[in-house]
Image (cartoon, rainbow, N blue to C red; front, side):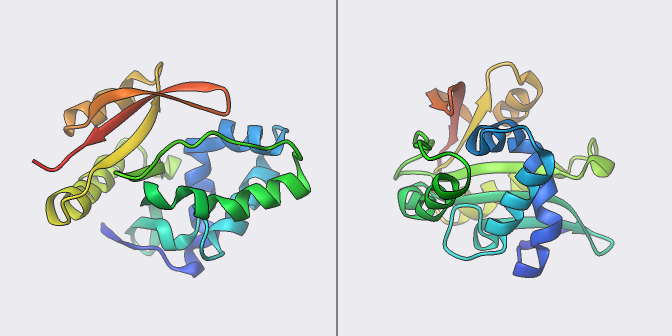
Length: 186
């Protein structure tokens, strides 16, 4: 398995993988539970530059010429600027009152979403992606990584804690209360 920066040509494969991690949130953005609309929304923004979901902010795990996992990560200090195209698009096409909370801020690189192709789940791909990020951002570049996890997602939380993340608080995103975890350089 190889982990690499995503390319624009990966957008179609990345969208359904990342949607696994954020389906409920995208439905709230769009004000409807429509899988195809949510996937198309994500694919549209993954394929564009300078927004929070852009391929520029993604890494992919590849095996046998197939993308088996993907992660979306960006500097928390850039969230407001990266989110402008998302907010404008959602307000114009789906939800004129759209005003999401800020899920991150300066001081951390934020793991927005991480997903593994369902055909490849249970093989440690998510763990490998997280270890890669920890090595690249925390160990090599002395950065703090942050993420949010649903309080009732005990398996994910256990994985994050085992990898060295620590609970640092709570955040609310589109009405959901989530635990905020970080891993910092030693």
